[in-house]
Structures are given as structure tokens and as C-alpha cells.
Length: 245
Length: 209
Image (cartoon, rainbow over all chains, first blue to last red; front, side):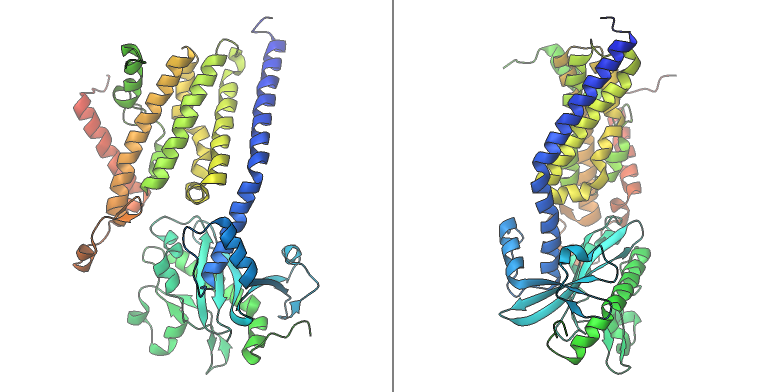
């Protein structure tokens, strides 16, 4: 067959396409369970990190161990816009519906230790994804994680570092005197140098060289705090969560 | 101990030193800037590129007498993309953390000029083994430069090497500060420039008039 003929060219292209696509489809399918498990595991690992487990899991913990701990200690529920916990809706369906939000409850032997919810919003280059965990009082921050972002390494990407996330621990999202929500602000510079004592519980140290990312964190915390505010108000009044009433 | 003839060694050395894709041909530097903040990510990137370059050269060389010249570039690209996606999928499945850090850059190996350049310049004209060696040599040349840049950037930018603290805490206590420029792309540009300068000074390279 003439190698320069159109028919040969078409046949060759077809063969290349077929072989390449079959190879990739096979590999992608073959690795799918592993990839999905990785992604799910990453999310669960970060929820567990945000709620600050009483017995932390080691950095080398196997996937199965993490799933086991998650299953045992974390309950996934869905709340609506008025902060009611919905029993009738499965968590998997919540993402599709407006005004339905996921909430994770961390328990140790039936005692609630933390409430945790997802936060996300724009940084400088990318969307930041994280989890914020509050103490059962609904006021004090227990922990925060950012697990997915595309910020500048060494600058904005510092949001995934322990020093930045540890800043949030013990801060408040509710001003008891003024009786209003006070989402945490990421300020420029150090809190102890720049901020009046009365505002310190609501501010954390900023990242130098990453003003836009810091601002993004402030904005997304305000946004998501607002979304979960109705629910948080309920637990602030009542220590136990009222289910379905 | 001579599986490789002198000529074969010559081919590998060519990519590694005399004709280094980065310092001599100045190809593929986008990824050299992007993934060299840490040694670990750079290392994985090098492995992925070596895998892709050596195999794509071999496969294209095997096919070289069958590829219709009208569509040769798109055929090369199909082979290369298939290998790159393969590497990316494996990383996502088995090295999830690293693949998260490398994000799009593994996928961008497809557009890395070194890979297409070697396919077109070498693999289309030479037998498979020679093309394989050429791919390997070029990949190693790329890796060597990347590792130099990454090592310098991680030590001076973050004070660590492969994640272990190298710069002692005592220095920080006395006011030592990590060099912020090194974690940014411009830092890599300066280093790369210096490496190209040194390499060309040593090899006595002269720009052709």
C-alpha cells in the first residue's frame, strides 16, 4: 500500500487513535478505585485534622485506619438554611440541592467534641478548600485546615502550614458582649503588634507577601460563617443538638 | 562490562552535557521553573519526564518507517500524550500527595519542547535503541539541571532538603531569614542563568555568528 496515499494515512491515524484510547481507558478504569479512594481519603483526613482528634492518627496511618476512625467518630449530617438538621436527606444528595449544607459532628463516646463544616472561596490564583471545626459551644475555633488550593508556594501556600492553621485555635467567631457574629479576620502583620486587645480573639496573624490570599481567607470565613450561623445559634443556646424538631 | 559501545555512551553523554536540553538548547525551562521549589516534586517530575522521553523516543522510532509524513507530528503527539496521561494517572493513584503538588505540570510534559524536539530530531531518523539512549541522555540532562536548581532553591528558600531541616534553628534565632526570592519563579530564573553560564564556561561553548 502506498504510504503517501490518503487511505493509508486515514488507516494509520485510526489505528493510532484506537490503540491510544484503549490503553488510556483501560489504565484509567483500572486505577479508578485507587484514585477515588485517594480523593475521598484526602477529604476525610482533613476533616479529622480540623476537628483535632483526642488521639491523633499518625502521618503514616494507612487508608483503612483513617476510614475506620472516621466511620467511628464522625457523623455526617445535612442542615438546611434555617440550621435544622435534616434526617430525610442523604449527605450525598446535599451538594445538588441549594441551601443544604454538610455538617460533620465529632463524638468521643457519645459526647460531642466538635462541629466541623467545609469552607471554600477564592484566594489569589485559585479556589481554596478547607474545613473549619468549632468547639461544642459553637463559638471557639477548634481547628482549621486548607487541603486544596493553587496559591504561590512559600507565600499564599503557607495557608496549608501548621503555623498558620494553629493561629486559629482558640479564636472566637461570636462576640459575647455585642451579641453578634464575628468571623475571624486574617490581618496584615502580627496580631499582638497590630490589634487592640478587645479584637484579638477575632484576628489571626497574616502571611507576609500573601495579602490577597489572606484577604481571601477572611472573605471565605465570613461567607461560610454566615451560612452556618443559624445552626451555630441553635447550639449556642442549647448544648445538645435537637434533631428533626 | 560493556553493554554500551563507545558510540552509545557518546549519545547519552551528548544529552547530558554537550547538548544538554536546558543549558545548551534552552528547552523545557517552563517546568524547570515551576516544579523546583522542593527537591521531592522536582525528582518525581524528572522520573515522569525520563519515563515519557525514553519511551516516546523508542515507540516513535519503532513506528518511524510506517508513519505517513503528512500526519507525523500529530502521531508523535498522540504517542507522547498517551504516555504522559499514563504517568499522571499512576501518580494520582500511587503518589497522591506529590501529584497534588505537581498539579498541572505533569500534564504539561506533553507540551515540553524537549520531548517533541527529540521525537522529531532523533527518533524519526534513528533505530529504536539509539533513540532510547538519546531520550535517556536528554532526560538525564534535564533532570541534572532540575535537581541542581531544586536543591539550591529548597535549601535557600525553605532551609530544608527533601523536607528535612538543613539550616539549624540557631541561625534563625540570630536573625537568619530564608530567601523569599528562591520560592518564586524569578529565583529559578537567576539560578538557571547562573547554571547555563557555568556550564558554557566549562564546556567552552561559543555562540555561532
